[in-house]
Length: 150
Image (cartoon, rainbow, N blue to C red; front, side, top):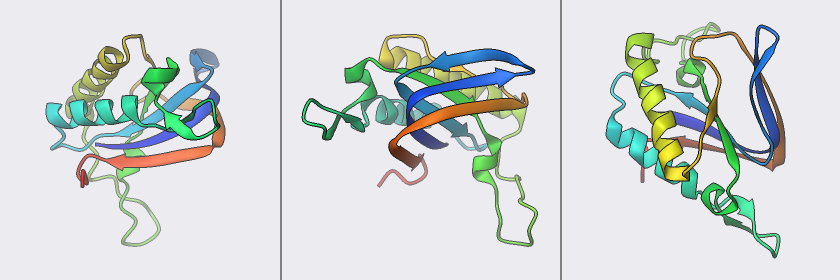
């Protein structure tokens, strides 16, 4: 599982002209899934994202987490995170899990993040043509891959 995490002042997801998700201060999580991702990956990544200390404390130091700030989150599926660009100029997405594998893992990740945060998490729609808007705060953008936990 690979996640691009962006600290945002605001973010939203629009599908066919309808805004389906909208948050203010929090995290926008772009999530890519591969076939061998597991429940262990889901738990580890959700815990890492919930507790990642990338929000400013009272001294202006990045020292508090989404859990501590009680910020919100949007999770958007993004198979393109697993693009291979080694050959030619057309990316290959062979590593990305197909929907029959990816959708249940994506839904399980969202549920785990809701459990870890103790609140609902907003989402895009798996496989939809989404328009994602964000105001990156910082900017702070972090990439986490569950295959590289060291």
